[in-house]
Structures are given as C-alpha cells and as structure tokens.
Image (cartoon, rainbow, N blue to C red; front, side, top):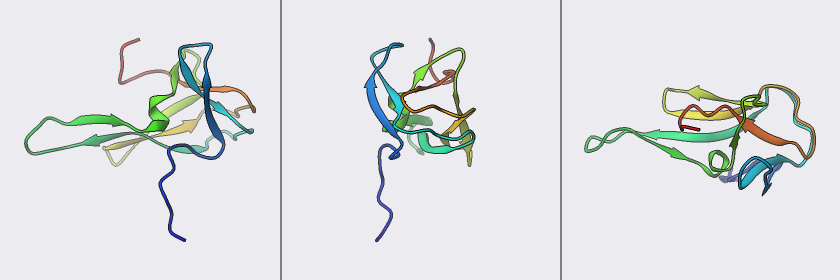
Length: 102
C-alpha cells in the first residue's frame, strides 16, 4: 500500500474553539517533540513572487501567546507543526503566529 496524503494526522480533529472559530484538538495524548505534519508550503515561480500556502493542518491552528506547538521550517520551503510539550487528550493545539498579524 502506498502512503496517501492525509489532511490531518489520526491523533487530531477539528472542533469549535474557545479561541476563535474552529481549532485543532488532540483526540489522544501526544508526546512532546511530535512532528504532526506540514502546515505551510512556499511555492516559487519564475512569473510571480514566492507565495506561502496553508495545508488543512495549518488552516485550523489558532494563535496563543502561550502556544503548545511551534512551526519548524524544513528545506527553506515548508513548515511542520511540532509539539513543544506533552498535549493532553481534548486539548486545543496552538502556535504563536509568525505569518499573520494577530
């Protein structure tokens, strides 16, 4: 069986957030340092400036000044969501926004 793209890892779900709109929530405990997948991808083109696209994982993560996750850059063109600490089942995952103004 080949690896198929999944918009969210099995350990996450999207639900109503107390922060804003919808958010990412842990369906189970997640350990510190877990790479949950790609949130953003930079696309470079000869005809246009670099653009950054969000994946579904990046589209539902909310901002917090006390974030429990961080975006980590790989290969200067993609970012992954990595947990900063252990995440409890039912807890919302958050980052400190760096691409967007809050």
